[in-house]
Length: 137
Length: 388
Ligand SMILES: Cc1cc2nc3c(=O)[nH]c(=O)nc-3n(C[C@H](O)[C@H](O)[C@H](O)COP(=O)(O)OP(=O)(O)OC[C@H]3O[C@@H](n4cnc5c(N)ncnc54)[C@H](O)[C@@H]3O)c2cc1C
Image 1 (spheres, each protein chain N blue to C red):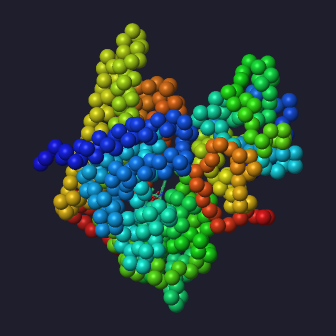
Image 2 (cartoon, rainbow over the protein chains, first blue to last red):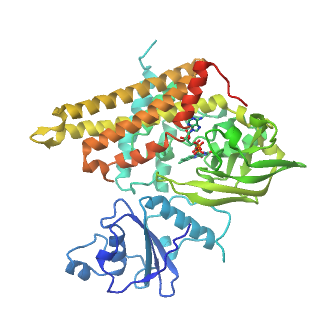
Image 3 (spheres, helix red, strand yellow):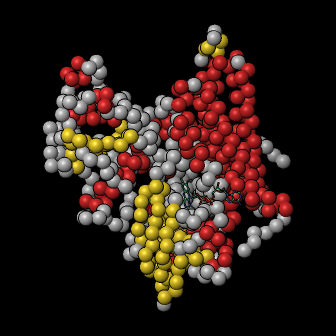
């Protein structure tokens, strides 16, 4: 099942307290709401979904002003850096298999992974097939 | 009765133990805590090592090209292989080779060439599709997926639930009702290619463990008659012994994660000081460790006894059910106690315990739930046969 939540635009009003520090999956999209990246906040992610979204969208200065930092700040993938505009997420303890489910669905529908996932050093395990495409494709 | 391991068994166990400690566990430090596959380069490197060691595809019978490792040794090895974070379901990340669904060993020469041999060479992957939404404990009555003969083909309609790995497989063994008037004898096993028109993965089903299962649908799926595995109507007669035998290393793998969890807990109990004394000095903790040891050893001996009977060609179905029950339930208790001894750390993803806890729970359901194992044993005790 794809993530069905509506996209939220990222701007400076997004407060770190409003994003859960839990494990889960998230998606990033460009200004046209075209999917760029399917990510996970896994068991080794230092601030869960909050940390992952802030490292993609925010700046070290803002985090420092709020007295926190993320070890992967500034490491964004070329397909995300400067292009990501929208996000959505799902808190999910089974983040790993849910991440693979979202990637499998995308791969089946479009024949490829989202652009930033193709650049990601962490590649998923071998993805399966559904043998059918999502409605409307 | 000889409880002494042979020199060869000791050598194999030591080799596998070292391999898990030196090659697999260090890699896990950099993997996601829920990962179930290795990066390809590491996988290839380690497969080359297990081939070199002569231990690749230990479970494959010698007549199908395996090294011919006996069932007692495989049971001992299964206990070693699972002793890492992903070890219960993905022992050594598959670098010792995957096993096909046991029924596939009943294949014809043509089926062997097309399906079994490519599987054993690692070129094709397979699933096992028995359980349906209507129930998995009693599949002989529950199966509703229907096959109707049409010339040289069978037309299959229906669906399966909980089918692991179907989305990443090239083919699978599918249980289909081909004669609704014959009960158990009306079920036939087919080999089905996943690219057959009408075969669909309806959804990935998320469960407790890191890996998901699938729900499948079949709509007017045409499968050639030659893809029947074994006899028409003989689906349940297939590889029954092989299945009961496979249950033994399956059980021993649970003991393996219990052993490693307990080792971690013993070390921790000696180090961790509370109220001025190490935890190990407290009777409450000592008793937990003793209970762990009792669960571990009773599971281990039950599995080894079942393996020994099977190796000697004696009836072993009761013992294999008992081993499955003792090992799966005992390991659950051990891991739970170890988590208690670790306190907060036991709940965290810093340790493998939380993953074991989730995964071992599934083992009381998969491969025949505990209740079904008890039914098998009760039948044996009361000497009654299954009704239909
Ligand atoms: C993660 C996972 C992976 C799986 N992978 C596969 C797979 O690859 N292929 C496949 O075919 N199946 C697979 N299964 C299915 C599994 O084999 C079934 O879930 C199992 O056989 C139980 O069937 P059920 O879930 O339909 O429960 P049911 O049959 O509905 O039983 C429900 C409960 O009632 C108990 N019960 C049943 N009958 C009795 C009785 N007479 N007396 C007392 N208690 C009873 C059962 O033990 C169980 O606890 C998988 C399941 C899981 C969770």
